[in-house]
Amino acid sequence: DDDLPRLVFADYLDEHGDPARAEFVRVQLALARPNPEKEPLSVREAMLLERHRDRWLAETPAPAGCSWGPFRRGFPYALR
Image (cartoon, rainbow, N blue to C red; front, side):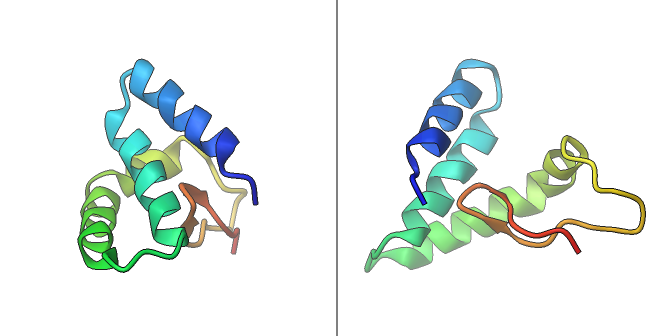
């Protein structure tokens, strides 16, 4: 439940050439907190996922016959 490691990872991604993934982690963390302005974040989250989801999931292969479920707080949440 601690988001500090995720924020450190987002900083690492920024510093190592993956600003889109860093932004996605931060957007999902913001969406997980109480926030009255979620619509712009939700739109940005959807856009980032549409553009980059396949690449991000390719970096985290699933066992044969399985697939990754939705992302939560910047990472794939479930293996199906």
